Amino acid sequence: MPSTSLSRRRLLAASGGCLSAAFAGCIEFSEGESVSGHSTSEGGTLESTHEYESLSIRSTDDTPVAYSSEDAAEADEEKRAPRYLADFFVTDEDDAAALWFTGAAADDDVDAARAFVEETDFDGESIYVDQRSIDDCYRRRLLSVSAADGEFRTNYCRALKSPMEPCEADRTVTEAVFVRVHRPYDDPPSSRGSSERTTCPSDAGGRNGSAANKMDGTETNDTDAPSAEVPR
Image: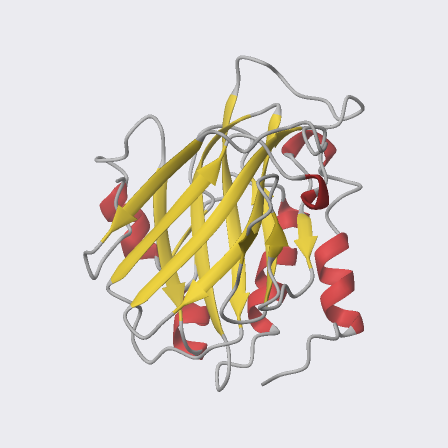
């Protein structure tokens, strides 16, 4: 299994967009989370089956950030729903080369995302891109990843931004989470899904991350279709 220590290039790629992209959302980088998982407010755990790193970037509006290819972007143009929800896998270097960014995110953020994908060792790792709409004053945090042969699941929580971060209460943006999971896939899992808690546990950080917050609201999204790059 690849080491969880981060190369200097990975750290620079992950942090490079923050200064210039404060109003675009600023990228967030999370170092590898292991099978130990995170404690929840109810005393249980959310466990990951494999180590992973994640990087998040945002569009300046509710426009998708990335597609698996230019053709996928063109096919999605007319059928996109107002509240966006889509995902896809990057499993090899050909997929990485075909990755298409729409220009909806800041250039520095896109550069960081490209570098994040390029750092992937596809002999032992895969990239999962999960993007969906979110209110501008919230951040989505990845809590765990479950990667099986035919199934891939993610668990998130949602927290208010820091009071020092600018946001617009009535504005919706699209957030793209790039997950580098330490498991290779020859073909993307046919069954994918996720759950999202409406508050974050204390160890996940964020403005809502206090012991008093109960994780009492969960939204679930699932798809069992081989192609999940359509709004669900």
